[in-house]
Length: 209
Image (cartoon, rainbow, N blue to C red; front, side, top):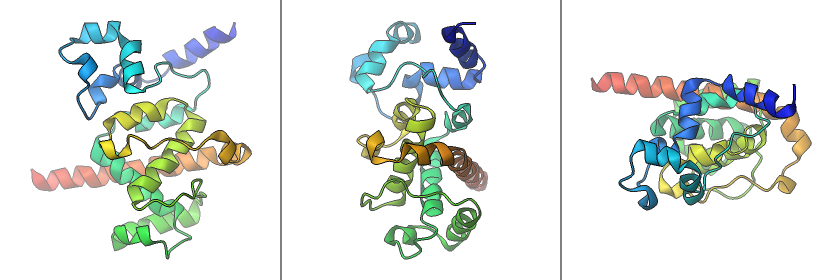
């Protein structure tokens, strides 16, 4: 079996929901796109690569990827934002004097510090960022760039415009060997944060009914 066939088989085994999310990015875009205004679904699909090029989205699924990251696909925007906040709290668990941690509630701090102490993950980016969302999304972008190249460009579409310029660090800035050794743990922590965020959002919606 040749290499291309192996890659294709791996892609075809991905969840249908994920494939729909990846190949119809306009459905998850948080803002209107002037270049596709008025176009129907068939026209959009026919011009998929042009749409991706205009939106700054990578169109193809990479040959190598960690399918575990697929769980982040198609999550509601509020859940993604809470996921970033919680993950920032986890990576900052050993920097309890960090100013951004004041943005967490006491309950959130306890949860984040508890996870961070049992599943420690190191902060990859040391640039000064004011909010937990910025810190969390930049960390997630870095891990996605390593584990599922291109996925961050799709995920970013559903976020507010304030995150448009947020990009992963250059490969030479991060120790790639460290990424390889810690990627599974980081993914597990991010997904635990997303599950927690989804539970909180579901409970919040329940209160509103």
